[in-house]
Length: 370
Image (cartoon, rainbow, N blue to C red; front, side):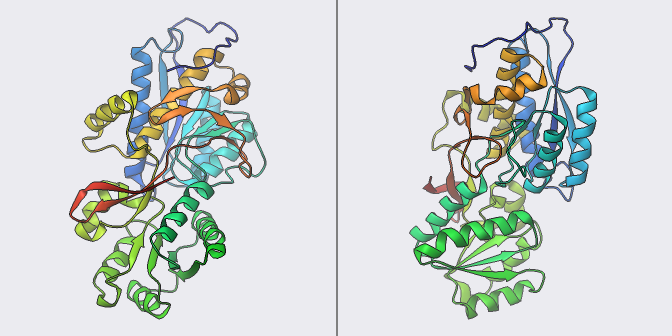
């Protein structure tokens, strides 16, 4: 890893740990599988940092808190972590939860490096306290919309549930597709059973259905209903938020879960660091690592470089985001101010549209890159 050359005050060499708070969804209703992948990446990077001498001789230590996809729980965890004296907070997968954590970190003056949440408006106002590794939703979902257009889809239905995240995604798709001849048809899952979704798709002559809903339900029931409806044999289903990435999706749906394109934040080929980390993550998880695990690793890689260069002063850490230059598992990480984004943003991580191969559901196919 390479990083900043400026050195603030000399760090203490007393052997006491440098502590980072880690926010991860580990229990329901959070997406626990994503949380475990994120935590695996965070923990592996901490191990590597400590094997490499830690932070100027001091061990790096994670203080983990389960957010369970609850914004209030996340905000309370940020308060607790601040009192415990962590140098920074890292992590979180769910966008609405990360938004609550970011708001609290901003109010407390606690640096927060968000690993995986993509909602554009992580904070109401621009802040120097928060940086993000994941691409903003507006960027990734426009790439997904371009994939839909390239595949010939113009009448696109979205099955959605109430959520700031799903509403934001629907708006991004509509704004990008409409000037290019695409139409977005909204199907409110508060009012429709899965079988009624099939009737609506036929009535609207939709050629694609996007699942902007929770997993396992109602996503699993919708997929099964569509797969079994002969009228919809030609329809494409998609899940831009990435549900099919995880083993839980494949276990729930089997062959029915293949051929459903989603967004994944990985390069076409991993470099030497990414390949080494990928092997170690596979051993740790007992399964192929998702892009979320790589996001976790990169989060700690960035924070370790900042801490080595800057020490543990919180204001100094936040001031250093624009000077970050770290070789991560998926490319060189730098943060900048991006129009419409209120936090320091890596612009951009590599983005792919991927699906599970219907002929071999454990294998992923890259369909589009952006």
